[in-house]
Image (cartoon, rainbow, N blue to C red; front, side, top):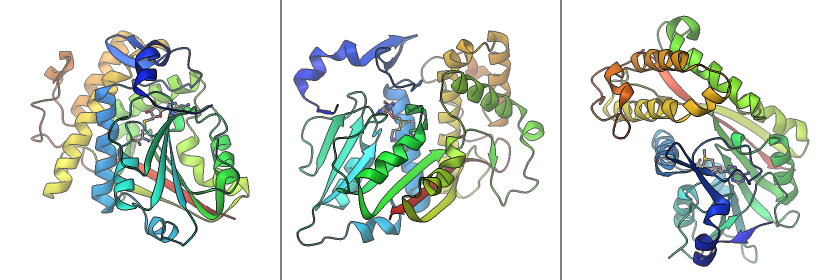
Length: 336
Ligand SMILES: C[S@@+](CC[C@H](N)C(=O)[O-])C[C@H]1O[C@@H](n2cnc3c(N)ncnc32)[C@H](O)[C@@H]1O
């Protein structure tokens, strides 16, 4: 069941939303979602960076279809829903661009701002593994970004989107690929197990650990097919957006994105250590994998021991393995 945030609820229910482990903030273990990552500031900053880097590479927060679907229409109130909205950045930015549209961000824990919100922004606590409160054919766009770990059954999300979308409405999903990727134009690309054995080991271990927790790691590469299989969508499209990873790209703006992306991934590798440990990866294997990843990404091994600010000073001199990218996979379709 959904509920609107209120200051009062946030104070009273803190313990039912959150728990701390190893100095990081997580969803409370009483919450049914399989989501394994922290929901604290460092993790939220990583999400915000990913959003900003996509907007920079794409030149916008949305595809051209958004403007078409959200064009003002007399007597038709437009509604957009963002599933697993995190700190609500996407909702807030989009709501600022489409002032006549109502934006709803659904999130399982209260990590969004709840004061001084624009009139067209609403945040609600909701488990996106459950049915939403919207009636059939009442929503214009359902946006689902980086949420495959939030549910055990991603196809159920597509079915729920199909239920609430108006005919012609858009379901748009975006997920990061969880394996080493190389830019299609990169020279010599690429055999991950030979070119980046550390990253290859890391992602294999992570995918095994997520699978052990009941998370379907095939989702990012199968969303397009799932949209098609639902039989509820037409004009189904997909695409890959490469975000540089490491300092190999010489163009100034992309070089900066690559360095920040690298720093976030190095921090992420530390973040998920407990998840890998729980799946049986030994401490010494983890330290070895982490060291390999640092050198493949152009970090330095001295950074391994730090706690906070450990990534400062890794800035940009070392390029890492040429051609490495993070790949963002988009898939979308329009409700029949
Ligand atoms: C990787 S973050 C992505 C946030 C945002 N969509 C973005 O792209 O920046 C995933 C978010 O999903 C939320 N989440 C996890 N399980 C959920 C669930 N079952 N229902 C709603 N939100 C969930 C997490 O708390 C987290 O904020």
